[in-house]
Image (cartoon, rainbow, N blue to C red):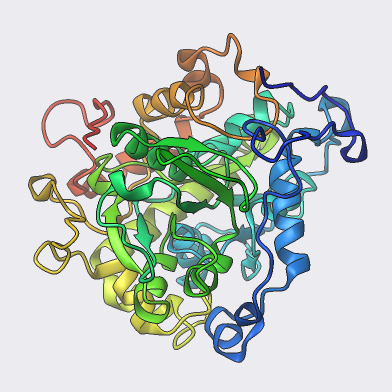
Length: 445
């Protein structure tokens, strides 16, 4: 039986497993990669904008493993309202709506001042920056706010979706992986335990008869076991090129980057598994969302996000260039990588392996649609009970999916913005008949 950590227990008092083969569900400092010289090479320093050190990997792994040790509600201090929009983001296309809202002046048009968005390397640092009020507008992986609000008691609200789809699973050129049945004995990286990437990957492997586990990389795996580990997105292409992992599932443009620069091969697009799924969501502090005195400010933020999404949907090439290092350098990658990540979704090209099985869904590699469907939030809440991850998740006990969909998400501001821009309904993640604000989730592995 897996032992649970006591809440409030500090890192140095963690009881670690005596055997490297029984780490499932337990924090384990060995659940990180050793560094390879390639990680700090000039190639990847220029490719990713920074080198990758062993210390970076160890810190990332420790933050992921010890995520349950953050302070409780009594530690969260209120902060005086700051009307300047301060955006924190990871270098992924998921952040595009927030970046374009600033760059194209959509926030300014709403009468809002905004600082140039701040690039952050990993999910734990952006969570910490948001919790310390360094940022008041962020994009977070869809399940992270569930963990923040109900485990850490932090007053976060989901207020919109940044985008739909926009992720994929790629495999290394050094592997013999042609289908999910080939993942036995392999190493698969995810960006965070609380991510739709983790949920979708484990769903695909279970369907193929493969058991997801969390072990040290040198642990012996059964023929039907696949080992999961957490890596920050920028660390994934170098890791697969160095043959330290066999596959990764992550947001764009790191799949496109893996294809172009690291010899990775596309195995499956996530939007072809879960039609029009959320990945990153717009998150704000609860006080900014619920205080009537701030309502005009919050409404302006959402008006700008929707305007940015509609602009991107109609100007994909221009957006890719603007985001790239050849444009405004929000994402430290050449335009060919960003353009591929946003616009290249060709069933004829991606047929071996068959990465796009549901052409009839009319999806894109990434789309931009803001309505936060309650059905998706409910699905994620239920799936979090099934996935293998580290840390204490007893906070999920008795947590109703219906309650989460009502309590965690505020629908008022984004609905008002969308009602003023009816062309949002053209996105293929939106039901084309009936009520556009309600849908049944379509998931086919």
